[in-house]
Image (tube, rainbow, N blue to C red):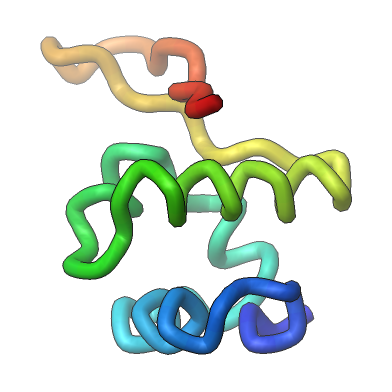
Length: 78
């Protein structure tokens, strides 16, 4: 499903596409940290992304730990 059809704001969808995130699967393969590094994606946008992913029973990729080892749990924003 294209990100432009997920019910996100046009601005957020455009930001994601500008950063190479075109499909729902692309979005689910991002971590919260990767999304927050994108210009135009803040806490509110991240919360909306998490809501959209939850509708499809998907989550963001977990964050890798600081030492490059096993990933830690995904960040939840409320």
